[in-house]
Amino acid sequence: MSSLRFTEQALSDWMRSGGSHSEIVISSRMRIARNLEHLPFPMLASLEQSEEVLELLAPVFHEEAAADFGSFQLLKLDEVNELDKKVLVEKHLISPNLANDSRSAAVLLNEDESVSIMINEEDHLRIQCLFPGLQVREAWERATAIDDIFEAAVNYAFDDKRGYLTSCPTNVGTGLRASVMLHLPALVMTHQINRILSAVNQVGLTVRGIYGEGSEAVGNIFQISNQITLGQTESEIIENLHSVVTQIIEHERNARERLLVDSALRITDRVKRSYGILCYAALMELKESAQRLSDVRLGVDLGILEGLSISVLNELNVKTQPGFLQKMFGDELNATERDMYRAKLLRETLGTQH
Amino acid sequence: MQCQECGVKPATLHFTKIVNGEKTEFHICESCAREKGELIPGTAGGFSIHSLLSGLLDLEGAGKEKSAATKTTQSLQCENCGMTYSQFSKLGRFGCSSCYKYFNSALDPLFKRVHGSTSHVGKIPKRAGAQIVFKRQIDELKQELQQSIIQEEFEKAAELRDQIRKLEKEITQE
Image: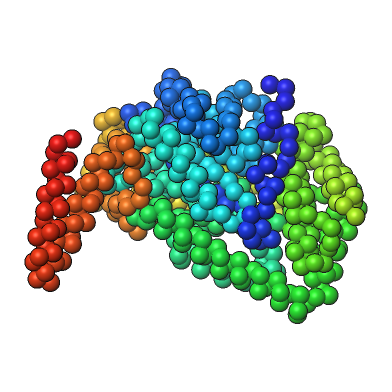
């Protein structure tokens, strides 16, 4: 496969429309885990059984029922090269687990990349829907509709008492992981973030870094999701997440306003300094670029920087990832070369904005 | 990835240790981690959910004398895929959907700890779940019936009883 449409552009089409609260909320994501009856979960499945899962699930979405969600393309992961896999992970279209540790793994992607249906991940089926901004209810509506299409065609592992059965006990019941990706620079700067995040933990939600379980929060981007999947209905889970996220947005907004009032000069200096460094640096590490882009993003929202669009910044967040850089500039880059090309990319993109 | 200590089991714990600015990466399996004593409480943030979970699943801490009840739990085995409860508690993953049935006796305390609850109240598959929807409706009506009897609302109770009978009839007809 010489060129893969899904790995050519950094920004998925679904990201281009802002959604509500887009100055703080980057995206809303819904993930539903399902398994087939009678076949062992992917961890224990033989190669033949994994192939069987793939053959059962993949054709479901070629039928007319799926037409409402755009046209889908099936990618078998063993036919995708390592670099493209990396880019798919960086764009959140597949999980690291699907890319690296799965047998007969495949993903169904629609044209605007807002729906990603992973087959043979930790569970047989993982339906993921992505929406820009705060749209958890909309994302759930779509995910559950897709779930219904599969349910009409295959027999799910479902138990009267335990609900949808999943490989990991943390997903059993609804199999639902609802999450929202938030940019919270002002709460970090004013040292309120830890207090807020520990409060979040007490209401059954959890905070992860931008690339999921075990990843670090870089560039002040946090992913907040439900921890509990059993004993709550889907709408309880979604409304709980929605209301907590709405409160966090409120806190972040207040903190931003207070920064402008209490330390206007400092915050202006910080934003413009970061912008200057992004426009002129010759070497740029990933961590620094994430932090600087976070400052610039805040500056755009506070009106300190003009003429830059959030969409360009979203695009840079993906383009500055190692996989995408290699995709653009060659796959044999060492760390220093990557930092050099990252700096070049940032200079050229941001420099021409004015 | 294999465990870098024993080279046999798959590495399930991945973490970075920084001592005096010197970074060392570890990729080891759980049993080696326990042996090396790397499983120090408070460092849990660096571990995968995986290992946190198996801590939860292992009802009594490693090294302690195991009670008879725990021993029976550990020896539970899924007749469909062959996984034992003790394997499950190490891996933190079920092998197949039948594991839920064979490990059932041990799952309530586990789910209580992980989710604070033991039963599903959310979505039900339309096709396979039609019966379950009926059953849930009947359960709800029965609870209402109990309430109305306690409150001596006998007219309402009679209505509820008829509704329940009707639903039960529909189930048996299917």
